[in-house]
Length: 317
Image 1 (cartoon, rainbow, N blue to C red):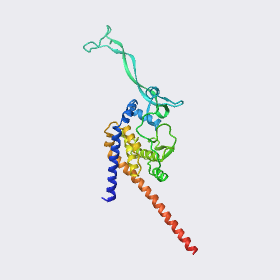
Image 2: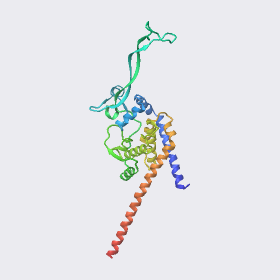
Image 3: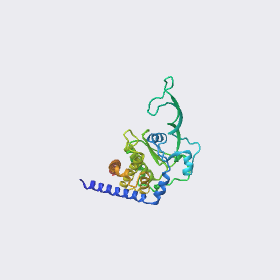
Image 4: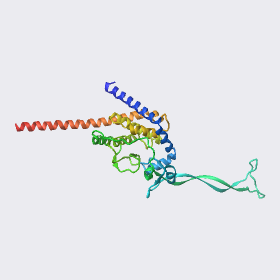
């Protein structure tokens, strides 16, 4: 094994330790208790309803009904917003005719030998369309957050952004996104949308996060993970790649991973560690390959320009 490869693996191990320690520290803070108390008020939706929500609003993050936004979160749905349709279970009662049996489970018949029946009220379960709204469609008191938006610039930002676009498995666009989502990957449309106007560091981190979703095949037919696991996977990959690039996203990534994990052990991270590391290594390698191509082109152009300059000087002589 080469010295360079050993160094790379050692660095990956160091990043893993920093990630696990950072997440652990947030779990131990009072900030987490406040956050989880609020998040526990949001309803849990079935997998079918989750699919319905994402298909109508890919950037959805926190979703609940019209009245619940008011009573539990002191927020109101903005005017002219269209609800996200889900299927809600309902219970109803109905009178039905049922045959009568005696204590020995024998049919009770009348004088004509016909089965005796009686009217009984029974409870049934059905479904009806219902409408929910994402936090981006509401206004009011802010929801608590564990992830702080990243500030600051990135050296050679435009070049790094272009390289990420080049290695992305799906097209990337920059658009205005209302609400709290910084970006999203749409499995249906096979595209990534990044919120425009963010800081350079937040933009690069979000791009890596969404590229991780696409690379991991989230939302595909083969996708076997729940939403919490998918978000922990994508943000862990984003943190890992950013660290390998010399960028620190801990202010955002540690809190984001903590917020999506189901327990203090962060089982989503531990159970998927090999997959996360492999995906992070692939994206980092793709970045390095594209970067080396640009460097080679630049060096070739500089060499060509030098040759032209030398030729011109010879002609002058």
